[in-house]
Amino acid sequence: MQKISLRSPATVANLSCGFDTLGICLNEPYDEIEIKKIPKPIVVINSLKSSFSNIPTNAQENTGGVPAELIINDLSLDFGFEINIKKGIPLCGGLGSSAATAMGVVYGINEILEKKISQNDMLKYALEGEKLSSKSLHADNIAPCLMGGLVLVRDIKPIDLIPIPTGDYYFTIIHPDINVSTSEARSILPEKINLNVATKQWANISALTYSFVSNDIELMKRSMTDYIVEPIRSKLIPKYNEIKKTALDSGAIGCSISGSGPSIFAICRNKEEAKKISNAMKIPLKKSSIRYHSYISKINQQGVKTIK
Amino acid sequence: MQKISLRSPATVANLSCGFDTLGICLNEPYDEIEIKKIPKPIVVINSLKSSFSNIPTNAQENTGGVPAELIINDLSLDFGFEINIKKGIPLCGGLGSSAATAMGVVYGINEILEKKISQNDMLKYALEGEKLSSKSLHADNIAPCLMGGLVLVRDIKPIDLIPIPTGDYYFTIIHPDINVSTSEARSILPEKINLNVATKQWANISALTYSFVSNDIELMKRSMTDYIVEPIRSKLIPKYNEIKKTALDSGAIGCSISGSGPSIFAICRNKEEAKKISNAMKIPLKKSSIRYHSYISKINQQGVKTIK
Image (cartoon, rainbow over all chains, first blue to last red):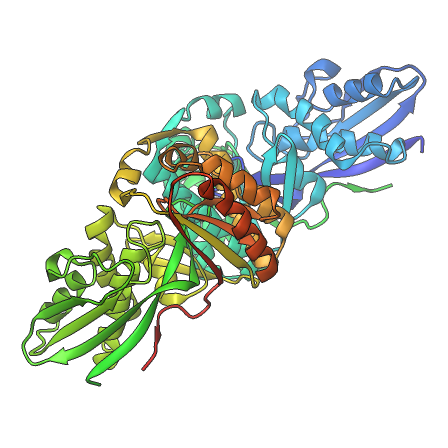
């Protein structure tokens, strides 16, 4: 294979109480990535025009460039890759944008290499790319981006990913157009937490996981409470409490911060409810001067996929 | 109904990583409790002869007496109860002994009262009894004792209990005959824990919960690691590390401290393996001067039950 075009999707990490553990894959938004073999063993990155085209094209500063160079080195390839990226996922938005680039590039290169790289190694390469933006190793975006669906990251050393079956829920995403860097959102978290709060949190994440498996919407509702991360990170997101209240009042099953934010997600029973809830969630932002993007998406059960 | 005889079973709380959250019900050991209506609105407790008959018979010091008196008061009953308890569950053993007395008494009184008390209120009364021994409110023994099977305690205020379906596993229990009080085992736990350790713990408890639902023994094995409680409480249990190693080497799916200890449980694939693993776990104790009791039990899917 000489070249590949692919779609690498957005992901929602944490899902409220599941900090660094749960992540789910969406159909939209997504990045479009084209990768071509080139004769020299180097990586050339081009950013194609889009709403979010302001990404570094120096390979060593690009979350897709880093794993691409690692693969060329590790496998002693005598050829390289031209990587054309059309970002559809907002940058630093909490929607797994850097993971989508990293995982998309690794997936595409692996297809060109006729699937020479194992799934675990693919994830390791993508993690190296993702580290650029978050300064920490966490797989709750790259794992669902590759595998699709809901993924429980049980461990990353060694990597242990558990696909969790889910019903057909819809996600409403509101991305307020403000800057929250992943590493900043991480640095404001406490190093230590109370054991009794941790206990409440792990009861919720276990119950939330089981609610997806058993399709128990009432349990999902009760379990989607984050005692640890949301109370701190929500302060970085203007209008957060208003938007969340509006979502829940309009019938959302649950609503919280997507990844490290500032995007806000709501889980909805179906497409019609998702539209209604999305409209309601926009109201607090429309009243302010904050610009935003919004998306409505089914759960993407496939993950990153080849277009041609 | 004038009188009732019932069996109130032992329970294994925590199940390794699920501190204060997961509990499972066993067939053995169990307490036998007989409750008779008496004309005066008082509570009379008799301890019948057994290996563990050294329990307080003053109602206000007995985990069954406390809820019995509360019920008489709250419902303004003009009669009382004679409660005869034959303890089959070791006291202060980490096998939910106080919960079995509390829950058994509440269940029995409710049967005599023709099920006047709601399930939530039954649990609340039993919690009041259990508080006597543990100095803290936790429902991971009383809930599975009442409901049977594996129960996820999502919350206790208000009470929210999730029955989790399981396959037919066997439990091996070794109870070293040493004294560990529930409140002491609780007081040595840290007030604060590292967020990154909590994250590993909640990934494990979610994965463990899912492994029961999906009957995935390999996942159960990998998930049964407790980073927080076991490293501390195991120091109170002589030969703990040796016994655990022996259990795992002999094929146990997982092995950890039952509740606050000193009992040690191992989850086993079937009865034959449970016997083999039980014999292996006894070896380190046989070599020492520590006396012990041992039990082999299926999961009890029914919980406390009427005998006549």
